[in-house]
Length: 171
Image 1 (cartoon, one colour):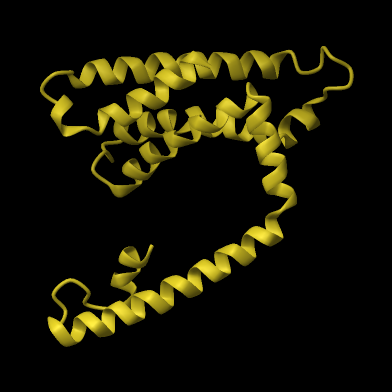
Image 2 (tube, rainbow, N blue to C red; image 1 turned 90 degrees about the vertical axis):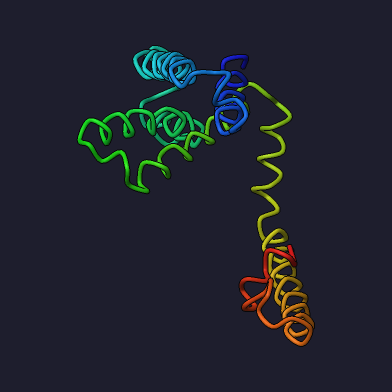
């Protein structure tokens, strides 16, 4: 669990511009490489011993959504390495791949009973949550439309050039 916390904290701190002069890029890369290496080792070890326990088969391992989150936690690192070796480092794809590192936070639920219970509760109440999302969307549309109309009369397109651009305010 400490490794997950270190990885996620380093990922967040790496984005802070004020740390660019204090912490060299190679330090962030070393932390990333070390944590990804350990995540990969853990995943491969779990995969290699999957058939030792009779009731835990490869099929069960591959259909577990937690194992897919674990894979998503370290796979972007290897994708980024491959893309950078092909000199594709400047593309947006690379940025998206780096963003997927956030999935490491889901590894915490493997070690926390409370997070697993919360996940199960969310899964069981998905219909009610969709109703909440629907009403939230209605509220965002109504309030952003009202703000757009109010601001359009005072200062046309100064801050809110369109209703969709006003959504961020309504949230």
